[in-house]
Image 1 (cartoon, rainbow, N blue to C red):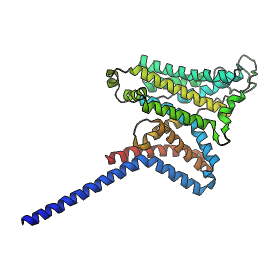
Image 2 (cartoon, one colour):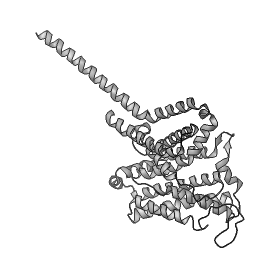
Image 3 (cartoon, rainbow, N blue to C red):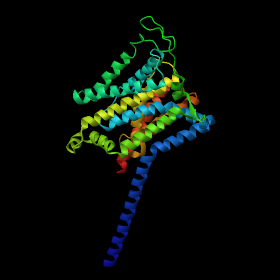
Image 4 (cartoon, rainbow, N blue to C red):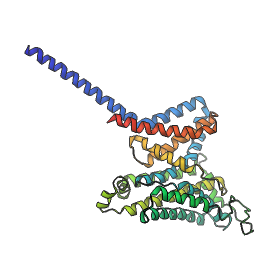
Length: 352
């Protein structure tokens, strides 16, 4: 009987080990699926669209997708930085639209060239970031309310200098005078020129901005403190870091990136369109939130934001090439966002 019991115990032990190994494998598979879910879905989309419409996989079309999402990715990176400190910037779309108008006004009304216009517009974005930080840090206004107020302020302010008209050559100003300036050709190259005829300048700007911000947020002390401030503000202060300074840095970066996006739009369109930037806020926020799902990080990250922007761009471009009605695009973007976050948090819960 003793030998029989020992055999039974051994069999039971082997069965427990097998179940443990099986459970461990299931958890590893779930983690891997969670981390790679966006890339798997992106691959499926690209392959599916390429089969349905072979022109989709053309290099020029892929570059046009990247060019189309470059501004969204840049603005989304700004949202990501503010999310890192536990904030949220609702004014980025308005800053980008105001930057389009400011760049156009600078050249067409004031007659400035590209080398004067670029610093003016970027300084404008940084100034808006400082104003947001002042409201949030010094006056203790909740970030959503502060940046929402700034969004309305800028949306109205950009219309005043031209009495609500778009800016183009020959603009009749409210004082009755006619502007005589034109867009600097070198400025237009920012939005229209392609390196070697293949890679658009906005794509190069997006890549450089993403690399710089990724290194800054993931590999520098200040970048790590940004996430620390967002995770536990009290602990960050006790560690000797100034959370007020960190939040100011985050909002200044966000405002500057929004102005950079506005510069790219102005250079691409070649006029100060009062309707520019209408959907930039929602698209940028969607890219930043989809970025939470990339690699299963479940936190703001610049790399994930860029992938999120590309994901949405591929999806919308493919649907357009398949002649899917335009009015379904917002629904599709919403469905993608819900699905990406469900994959991140649903699989993430089952994996641990």
